[in-house]
Image: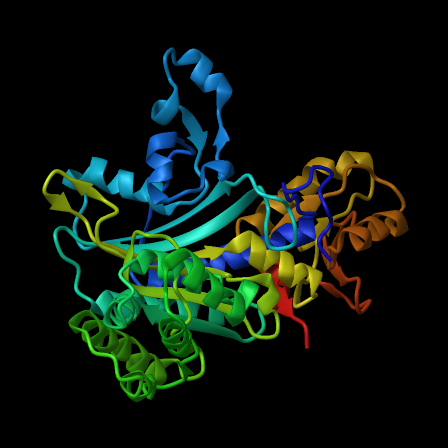
Length: 444
């Protein structure tokens, strides 16, 4: 179980917990790079005006008062704050560095972000996100919307987590449908539909009627669309059966059909069409994604994102993109709290080199250097205590092997788990592959 930090909302990990987090990060990084995504890092601080381009989230921003005091006149939109996600800072990064990037630009980014909200499981004030995006210059082929769904399904599938569902919708489909039934404030309808899982269909219907002027029939139609969920492309016929027509609806249906058809072929069971997914942020323009752990839906989305066509622009030049963000801290917290996986040991060290006496410390360092030179993590004992105490020290730290050097210069290594002790040469001995580095092992 994850240990709680003494400062609420700011997680800290014990060594064995940190190993689980590193395993998640390394798995994501490896998968992203296998698909050709390049790593970038953006600054932690942005102007408030830049951050608030994403929507009405001013209560989530942590202002940086020390920097503002030093930067005379920084106020309002020019005030500085810690970034609360990676998408909006990345849009700025693309605009400012467009002359140095090759488009379509494939990026991944793994960084800390800060958000001022009430801490609870799955929601922290400081947490790590892992994002991938593809951004074009002027245009971006829709095929990238399909590809990103497959990349994320592969990345999450490699993690020690329960089954997950990547739920996908299309804003064009939804907006065209709402327009077709006479609801013109489509962003408002999307924001209401986005609350469906939190407040239920009845309250969403009331919101649509009281705040957006929807009739009973319009509210019923909007909720009928949101109720459609399929693991294949049969959602197309179900939408058509609702009897609504609109060119934007047709475009969105065709795009979503492409995503789901390819996902059914490549990652069956991982991806579904879920027409209740709205993503309340106004900058999404097409495909939208949300991901939940099956049986752990109360945790919320562990990965979300979508297509944005106008978030990044400079004059008449636009940089449309599509991307997803994985809540790494949210995932790691659930992995630890539910004991889905654990590190095989709490330290990287595979071998403790013992000391027969204090004068043997330098020779022990020679042994350690030989082992490290072949990629074996090693510690040298600090003092020449009785061998039993040195072995107990290794056991407490989870170090599996203890190395002994005799007065005649011969060596033996002991597996303290089995008790087996055998002759060894520091120039050639290797631990079993599974013991060289700590492993993160899923629980049965």
